[in-house]
Structures are given as structure tokens and as C-alpha cells.
Amino acid sequence: MNFDPAAFRRHVGRILNEHAGAFGLPDERHAVLRRQIEAGDDIHSRRTFPGHVTTSAFILDRTGQRILLIHHRALERWLQPGGHYEPPDDLMGSALREAVEETGMPDLAIDPWHREAGLPVDIDSHRIPARPERDEPEHWHHDIRYVVRASEQDALRPDLREVHGAEWRDLQDLENIAPQGLRNMRALGLVRP
Image (cartoon, rainbow, N blue to C red; front, side):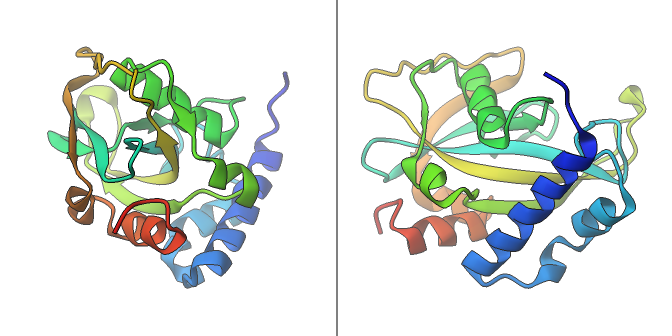
């Protein structure tokens, strides 16, 4: 399948606009990503600076009361599973692939809300520290986030080459990691209060 960087930029731009409208967010919240789209940057490539697209998954238990977090090796903190977008995946597929790879849980599924709405639950642009050993300057990750559901049968088998560990945490822990994502999930009724 051929990958068209210009079509990908248009797709991400449309998602940005629709997401901002759906959640009442100002356009300037994603100013860097919008400038990169307008400039024609290859936002799909991890070698594009000042930033590029990543995807991640808010993995919820069946009840919507707990979230699965991984301890990120490079950033040394608890986060939702995620990683660099890899063409030609669709964005939802990319988030799901990252979730399965990092947790070892094969039966994860994208929440049905995403297919109905055609939107991610959150989009967050955040700075990533420079990694001179990889020839990467400080840059932005434009993280497009989806809710993923785990079944009760899913056994947690984190890939310890990618993460230090993984564990089910109280949903409130997300307040310090992705507060806008948590607010959006609550507003949509995707989690328990």
C-alpha cells in the first residue's frame, strides 16, 4: 500500500479541527502541529523535527475504573502505552499495535466510541528531551490518543525490552499524566466517576 504524506497531513488536520470542535478546545492548543501541517512537514516520520506524530492507548479495565500504565524506559515515568506512528497504519491501528506490543495483551480492542465518532479521545503535543546518542534534538511528540478496552482474560505480559514494567493503577493517576484525556473520557461517560 502506498503512503501519501500529504494525504496524511490533511487527515491529521481534519482530525485536529473536528477534535477541537467536539471538545471545545482552542486551535492554539496544537499550534506547533498546525504549523508543521501548513509547512508540509513529514509529520509521519520520527526523523522530522521539531515534531512528529505518535499514538497511544488509554487501556481501561472492563469496569472503566482502572487504567493500565507502563513505566517508560527512556522517560523514566509512568505513562500510557504508546509510540511512534508507523505508516501505513491508521491512527487507531497504530495505538492498538503499540498497546499490544508494550503490554503483551493480545485481546485488546479499540473502544466503540472511536469508530462511531471517528475521533481520538485526546490529542496532546508535549516536549521530549534531546537524546544525543540517537542524534535527536529536543522535539515534540504530537500524541493522538485512543481508549482501548481489556478483557478479563487478558494476561499482562509487558515487553521488558521496551518498558520497565506495567501495572493496573487507579484511574485518578491519569490526572498527573493526561488530565485533558481524563476529562474527555469522563465527559463521554467512557469511565466510571
